[in-house]
View 1 (cartoon, helix red, strand yellow):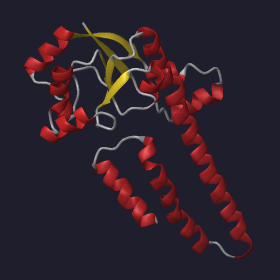
View 2 (tube, rainbow, N blue to C red; view 1 turned 90 degrees about the vertical axis):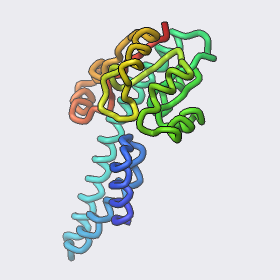
View 3 (spheres, helix red, strand yellow; view 1 turned 180 degrees about the vertical axis):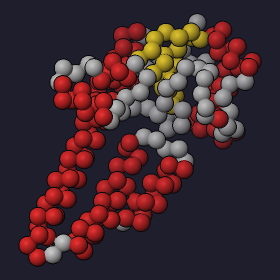
Length: 213
């Protein structure tokens, strides 16, 4: 299990899969390396103590990870979705954003995501040219809302690169409406201990919301 988890984790990293939920199962399997080591090293009266410490460590780590991820979803992405829900009464409008999750669910808008999980049009554009499909998709389908993790057109990802003419087109057709800062999500809780935890492992990121002119 440990070898499988290590291989799967390295494969995801190589493919650019940077989302926590992709690694959850692999993360648990990787603990098998540690468990085998603990069982091999422990003996006699200390074995139960070491196994107990190992169990507490795993529980503590997963709790820490879950609280941090939960903050990013509930105190940041959910609020962005609720903001969009109030902003746009026409639920037939489209939003282009990162992989679908809390934001489109709470916004109730139609959605295209930038890895093609929920929109075949995205998948088709990726198959045509996986390196520079993103600006072409925006020009072709013109979603009313574009929500990104970066200020367009500044990005270091090849598939998001905008040519000069595409930059001009985007700036003429879209305007920056609002930036949702991750720091605001961290500070939204009144619990001082949760704030410290979120600062140690922030899962929220800044979002840039663009609206078609």
